[in-house]
Image (cartoon, rainbow, N blue to C red; front, side):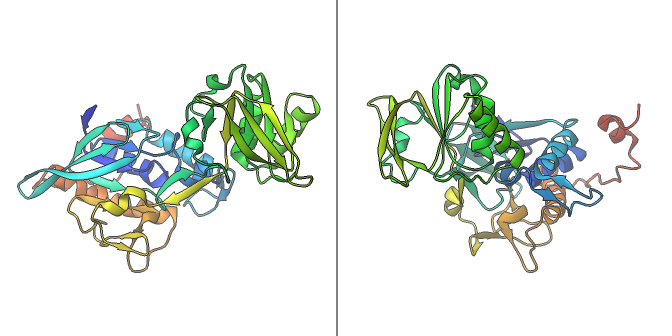
Length: 347
């Protein structure tokens, strides 16, 4: 699949989402690609319940509420969203009037041609942590092993084992208990790191016999040849091992943050961050920008609101690259009636 877009945004966290808004104000279309299976980046994946206090005009909101608000804000604008994909390569496609056009390829076969690449990847790409002491668990990937829930239907009427002790493990235990044949939650201790109200829901399901809680246990072996057929668990205290029949294993041990393919894109790096200028936040490669926590410059602060400022200025430069010689049609949203109609503010 090959597409063209005005701005290709790598990362669908808050700064990547706000890029859609700023680009939309100038009539530019964005295409977002993210390695995760949902938007929101760290806010949604690592701390959705964490309160955020430093968004101007918003005294307090959770990280997930912030992401939801950004999604609502960009509804009026055209954009494409491609999740569960990783940008593998960036190469020059053509040069016209000294302006480089780039070709981006993902691990899922998507190809995108654009004059502007915005790297808004936070601290880098996220990859799921694999179960400890298990050799090559990925050989069972999509054959009984998963690191994220992409479709709840996969677990319908299945014997499911969920591993983990954070929000994701608790959330999916509660949710999938509604449709799975059996749900077993395995954790190395009887203490959890997730939201208290979700843990309370989980323990109510345990009391009702709808969830089987196994602590303190860890996985010892995945059973099965071509597909998962069972799992062997080891008790931390007694050191005894037990085998169980299983259809699906869902490992929710959190994420590792990695720069990944970014290291191969010939960008100047400083302490694993991408160096940019402070005029338009371009990197050392023309037309490739870095905004948000992934970039570095003198005085840099890793704050969401700083990323919003950076991408706002970067979008101005992206417009000039798309329309050389034209004046950027900047205007205050408070005085732009046409824009207010688009946003649904006025009739």
